[in-house]
Length: 238
Image 1 (tube, rainbow, N blue to C red):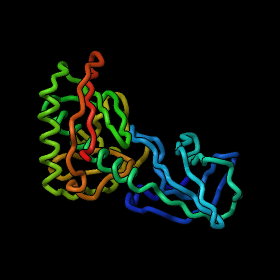
Image 2 (tube, rainbow, N blue to C red):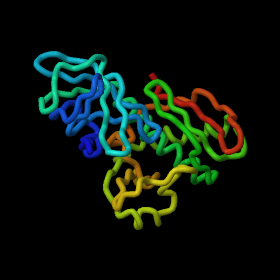
Image 3 (spheres, rainbow, N blue to C red):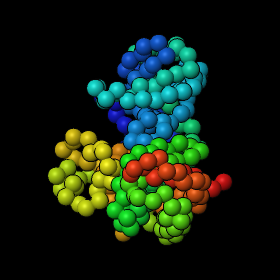
Image 4 (cartoon, rainbow, N blue to C red):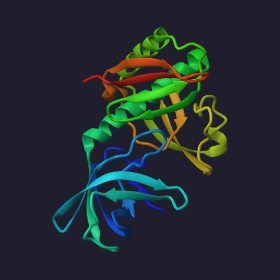
């Protein structure tokens, strides 16, 4: 299983790691700063450097059977198993994803508290995020008000807390899970992301340290995708 450094420090931009496995363009390292496509959040991109030669990492996925993070390079690497390489994130991309991820937690909490709505789908990409909610109406006003409240909460500069809690204890907390069709992984301890006074959720991805880092979130559009799938698109203002 690959050690996931982003779980402990989302702001780590580079690290050295030993190569665990190479198969063509696909590489597994002993540890990584790269977040895979997971939890509805797009994967990180960046570079890996060995002997002064840098190569782009063009995709990052997770092998759920082994827990390994698979890094796809732009070409077959010259390094081999056992070599030590330096990884570096595309930080601008990661930081935007972090902002949108924390914003998504605030939005889901607003929708849950006001309408009892759960998330029935969604995806966060660097230029646009979307979430589906289990509400009756696809009323733009509902989401305009929710995004406005999101921005107000973000402006309050609340520190985001990350800690671990026994699974059974965590799942007793109301609203801990806001996904309609997905339970947290079957682990004895869950990683908890808490925005005090706003939201608490089990989550394994990168987040900002303080809500003020989010900046301003802009509503892009609202769509009706059917029963329990009222979709909102939003992004970070430029």
